[in-house]
Image (cartoon, rainbow, N blue to C red):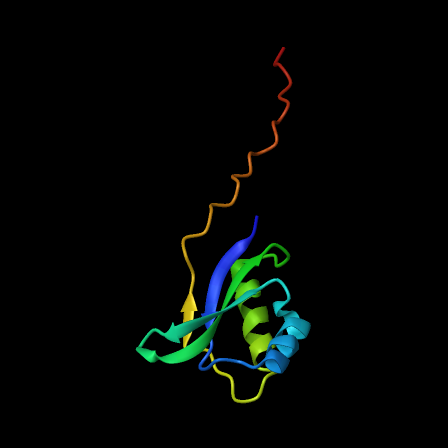
Length: 101
């Protein structure tokens, strides 16, 4: 199961910055050009993640935020986390009960 979320960066990034992010932990992210949600005239880069490696959604988001810190002057003014699929319910192991005499 993958964890899906998007980070909106504060500006468009260069090809070099894109490579830095990919090497820092965003290799599975899809990079797209978008506009700042609060100001449609400001072009920004959005990273869409489908993380199948991290053990939790929180760990996936933290790893992505740490990767963004490797690029100077980049901040994350937007985080979008859609509803995530439910974890499979763990069924308890059946317990053998000995019959009473």
